[in-house]
Image 1 (cartoon, rainbow, N blue to C red):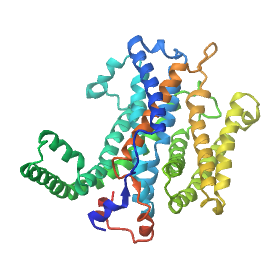
Image 2: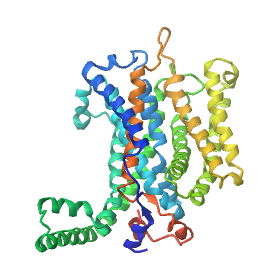
Image 3: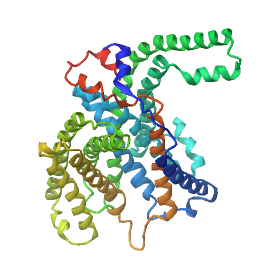
Image 4: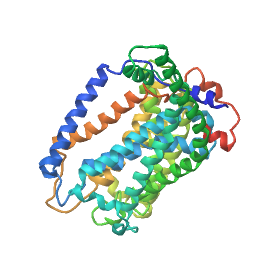
Length: 438
């Protein structure tokens, strides 16, 4: 497939930016920003209920531990496309990467909000202060590196705009300084636009030659830091409830992020198609729905086998809050998986939506259980997030949704409904061409 044909694989949404949902999420974002400013002006104690017993609250449990798993859609689809060579799912890659990009960048920002002394954060960039044996250091390094990788992976969408669009914004900018529209002004505009087209057409193939290394790095980094997010809790055997503390935490976190990644791609595609009045991408989504229950089945088998091996099954039926949260987590994941084992539900948008929500809630609850609910620092310690903590997390998620809404209207991100089904059965491309399509 040639370059100009690759650009047609994705389209931008032609609709107004300033809509009612935009103003709704903008309002939530501003409330969140207000409390973030308050946190940096008056200190973390002014806005949070964090303590020495609970130094990690909802910002780490949701925005980092859970948010990065929900943001693994780009990682999950990349495994499918680049490792398993299933190119029929390639139309989903840009929207998945964009969602991942926002999720990871805002997770990194949440860490800055959570750090007690943010003015010391510069130490992370000083190699003399690095602690390479620390799982937390690996998580921070990988998340930061993955953000950069995703920005580079998303760069081709901007190149497509520079190479193939009429660049009306550039024309308006030039006419702003040359408002008389003389023949010389029009020649200047035409020459500038042609130069941008030519320069981008020269640069784009060269950029694609290095992109394959970036894609490979983008597959390695999430594998490292998602398993390390589980490793972080290995050092707390006396504080993490036995229902969740196990030596399999790194493996469980890695598999957990994969089925949550596929589930969020399904959910994001269905919601955006419904709101933007686009045709549902059922062909591609049914393939993802086929993978989720098998991943979840492996995860559940490891989970149950581990409880049996450690002789902790009795705790499941103890009837306290920990057993109730475990059973809720288990029922959501097992129920969603069992529903998806029936192939007739793969092509139903309603069933896809319901099962994706169940898998996301179950997967997110598992991470909440590990990082917050199952964490027992000792007697006398209590934690429930304050209103300001909740609104900061809500504001950060709203900023992510706002950014997604705006970018899909400026850049070709969503699959072209008139083209992507035509490429579903083409032969796998060669390596160089595969990278060019990224």
